[in-house]
Length: 338
Image (cartoon, rainbow, N blue to C red):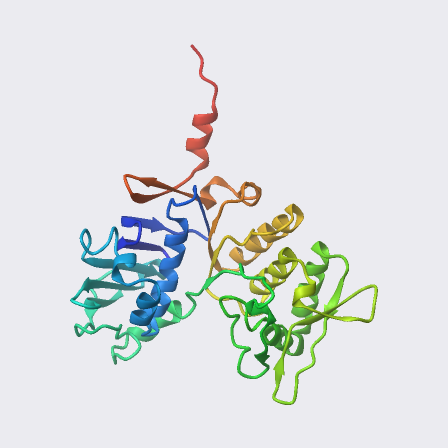
């Protein structure tokens, strides 16, 4: 992505954010970091024609529109990819019961775009016969907001996944982690061994995963340690360890997505694991995988350059985004002389 412009979404009244390879959002609670990250989830549901269900399950249009329908009656966005070669924009206006697409455009070389809207309640990008759609879809298909927060007794990591159907990409909450890792072990053993080695660097007792599909080809995430023959389950791992396993898998998978979007990946991680995470972020960014994440960890941001950081502040109720730069920070930090 080159940039995204958003108007009227949650705490974002009107903002344009330019992207680099690494984009780390920092700010206080309630500043709007998670709202910005959630926009990509909104965009994913919109593109997949599940927008109305998504909005309904999150409290309706009043919770999506900036300060509610009494203040804001529409959402607008424009996102540009690949140096301006492709773009996608839409305007959704609040109707009597649902948001309506009053404009939906496929953009090429920053032209005015082809309007494919039909005043419908769901996007048409996946159903239109406009030839530009397939190029934009390649980018939108990777917009998944990852969050590995739930590590409880019935967390997504404890679920069984299918070794044929659940292997194509890592799911947003990690519910197919077992099948995804199992497939990496089979198809890319060198990558799998690197993942194991990385996990061991923060959990020295960890030996390997134990994969045993059942008769229906479903598998559960299990593992072995270096000091016994006992087979352990997910709930025998600390919260931080299982989150790090998911993060290592996400950032070290053989075929990286074009974009990785993740909210507060540092939760529960030991400082040594945070350092490893920073290295993984830099590694994928060097391979043309763009990283967008929100964090409250000073430990994590200490591993990056100011240009990688976007500050988020809530000013008069609006979220305001500003990318840092070394030059301005340097001038601020210089001592003042009389």
